[in-house]
Image (cartoon, rainbow, N blue to C red; front, side, top):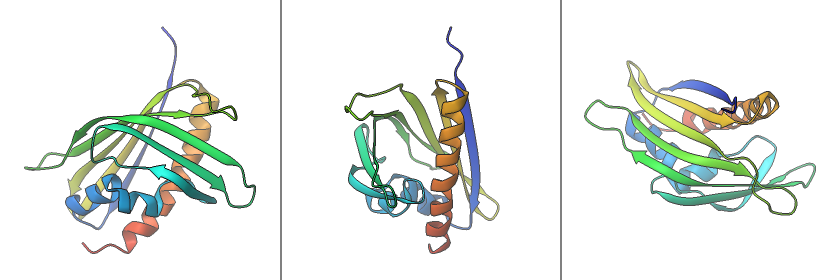
Length: 155
């Protein structure tokens, strides 16, 4: 059995569960915050509100380097009746020759808190510690953008 890595991030927001759910699943909201700081999204098909393929190409603002990541939305369970919502998707970077690399799995879970909603991002099946460290930096930067986006949302 191959040893894989898992990372997890938790953020609380002063917005309703439904509003945070839309922020992490709706294409119009996703493009406002998805991807690390310092990149521009280009040719992205981000829709985590339906099962099926998704893809995103990003360009480094300073370097001009292109990054491509693709996957498939594997499950969607919207929040309701007091239960948390969850969307899961596979994740794989492409190399310079557009070959898809190691596949991992990401889950966004949205749950109610006493003062709003909580997002838990779990990234599983990362191939090694270096990959986990790189993805940790990327998710922390991406979540900083979500924090700014969510601060402008109505509760």
